[in-house]
Amino acid sequence: MALSLEELEAAIIEKATKSPKPQLYVKDFYKCDPDAKPRQIKNVANDLVKKGELMFWSSGSTTMYARPDRIKDEEGAEGIN
Amino acid sequence: MAKHETPLLDELEKGPWPSFVTDLKRQAETKPECWDILGQLELSYKDRITHWKHGGIVGVFGYGGGIVGRYSDVPAQFPGVEHFHTVRVAQPSGLYYTTENLRALMDLWEKYGSGVTNLHGSTGDMIFLGTRTENLEPLFWDLTHDLGQDLGGSGSNLRTPACCLGESRCEWSCYDTQEICNHLTQHYQDEIHRPAFPYKFKFKFSGCANDCVAAVARSDFSVVGTWKDQIQIDQAAVKAYLNGDEGYPVNGGAHKGGDWGPFDIQKEVFDLCPTQCMWMEGDELKIDDAECTRCMHCINVMPRALRPGKEKGASILMGAKAPILDGAQFSTLVIPFIEINKENDFEEVIDVIEKVWDWWMEVGKNRERVGETMQRVGLPTFLSVMEIEPLPQHVREPRSNPYVFWKEEEVPGGWDRDVKEFRKRHAA
Ligand code: HEM
Ligand code: HEM
Ligand code: SF4
Ligand code: SF4
Image: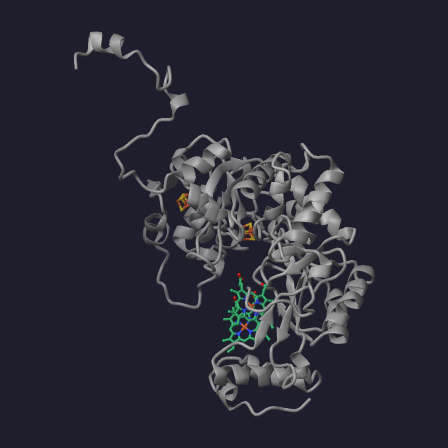
């Protein structure tokens, strides 16, 4: 990959902080480093969850990522299956 | 919790079949929250809209799957289903349980949940229906620490792999379905517990084309046992079937309740052979194995006379899915034969899996199953991505399109040519 691990982590966090919607698909992070393999990006994003920088958010059938401080509604959003 | 009036649901108890309404009422005697399931469903019948909310941030720490969040949108009326999350518990390969284990699981669920279960869900897991967020971590702790069991997959994860009972009980199994199912479950723990893909992805393993786990209908990656060489024939047993000898019931006796008359091999076997590759020569059964599509039909009818060949392995089909976005579809044959090799930790199969994943993660749209991505790009493109030569087995029907499209690299000299040189030989 073109970015170092730290740079990639920072880019993912920035993306999740500035995105119009708080919830993102893993695919939305691919653009953070177009040279990295999708599975590498997935691993870094999942690591960020372990570190508490991101959290998983489930729409019911798809799992998305979000910055914990951007998710307020304890019960999640309605109407997305 | 109050009992609710449920005149509409009560109608569902009147038919001759078992009713989930009756079951839930019975369960409500010890788990009063079940009254609220009934009450809320009754309200939905009246309002003609669901009162369940999907999704949210429910789960156990470190896992991005295994719990399916459900909340009531009328919790004040039905506090018992304010939270009603589903817990997916990974099933053992081949669905073998000890009664001791089943009791322990049920005790766990009585303690932390509604006691309502579904064994087994469409994905394969045990489904525990209905618990509150604060029960999830303690339940998970007990499940993993006391029972040594784990949650299954949900969301955009690899779903809990599932297999038929395979070699443990079935002589037709062409490979050890339980072994590969368990191996890949361990190998892909991260993919099972944390989101990995544009959408869900399922492996299922059947030991033969009878496909007892319905891999071809239910999994993105269906591994179905098959063989390369000839069906093994015991001619003496064929004669015993033809004579209707005792101990040679057709279909292993499966349909013996009906009066079918004497066994008619022409009608019951040859005419139903999809490739019409069987016939009698005198009193010898003949099979043109080059034509046989390994469908298992003749073997099912005459299990003591016929068995799968000796050179065993599997076919890999990809892309089945339920009809959520487009129509439902079965898996498409991609690899007609692959060895299933325990000695090298199933390396050949893992190579194929990771090749599809790498491609689909890149090219698949959000919430697009791999079968939909395959459909979008077309089978020829998909095969070239997979570096598989097109084979007759990939062809569903003779072509109706007269055009052949070549790619530049397939044509000697590519698209460039010297027009003047050409015109010397072919005047315009
Ligand atoms: C009129 C009401 C209902 C009808 C007609 C109904 C019917 C069905 C049918 C036909 C299936 C498919 C079974 C299969 O594939 O073998 C199913 C699955 C399911 N039902 Fe119901 N159901 C009803 C109410 C409920 C309620 C109240 C709940 C939960 C409290 C529920 C939870 C489920 C779940 C979780 C599944 C999926 C299980 C699986 O994946 O196998 N259903 N239902
Ligand atoms: C209008 C209401 C609902 C609709 C349209 C709906 C739709 C669906 C669909 C399409 C699936 C996927 C089935 C499959 O691919 O196998 C599904 C699965 C499921 N639903 Fe629902 N659902 C509804 C209500 C509910 C409710 C009320 C519950 C629980 C309280 C529930 C729990 C589940 C669970 C646990 C599964 C997965 C079962 C498994 O793992 O096999 N759903 N639902
Ligand atoms: S799929 Fe085939 S091998 Fe597996 S249990 Fe069924 S009949 Fe036996
Ligand atoms: S397995 Fe199926 S295709 Fe092959 S000979 Fe038997 S009936 Fe015909």
